[in-house]
Length: 247
Image 1 (cartoon, rainbow, N blue to C red):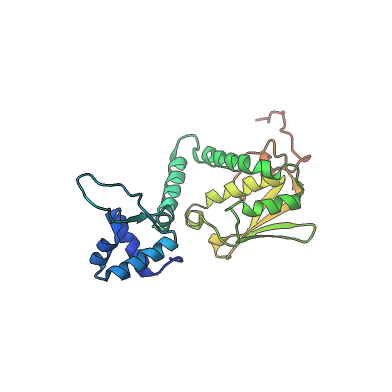
Image 2: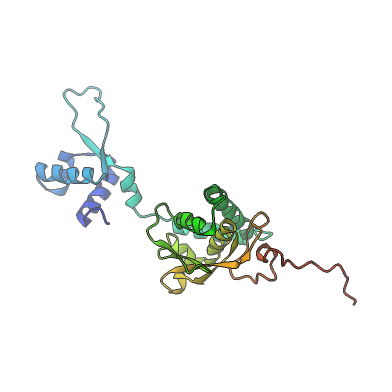
């Protein structure tokens, strides 16, 4: 826990179970003085990990009610989550659906990401788009950088917020290569992968392979682009033969 000590985390767990506590209740439960408990709660309050419960005068009680404290939304964010397991379960459930349920699901997620970022990159050069997309994985992302030598471009990502999902179900990463390709207007592939032990994900922008973003939706990472229409270079699309093969 970055914002407090192990003792503070244990205290948060205690407050979680009690819903709300007063200084006196905390002091009694932790076998410390009233002043020590007050200082601990003051520290948690300064860290925005607890908040004061709005005072309400209880019925049939006389006098000023004691100040009570409860967990803040920030504290709940620090508690263990199972979002990764949920994502893996959803991917597996979609994969088991009839008519290839996984592809439509990932395609829909890709569409959502493109819809979110398209207004931000519209009308910009590839260099400007890459600067905007440094925040593609998370807002104000300090773990992503752009490298270019003027002819090639790489978006390098050092921290994957969904690494557990990416390791267990690599298919999820196809969403990112597909979305980035559409947003940049060029085919994007990964040269390095965190889940393969490379320590980072390197998204290579193939500046010599423009795509028609208006007709692209989703494709699996690693597919042969010469055989798959969605990422075939613009102007080099192969026409299907109308001749029937002789038996």
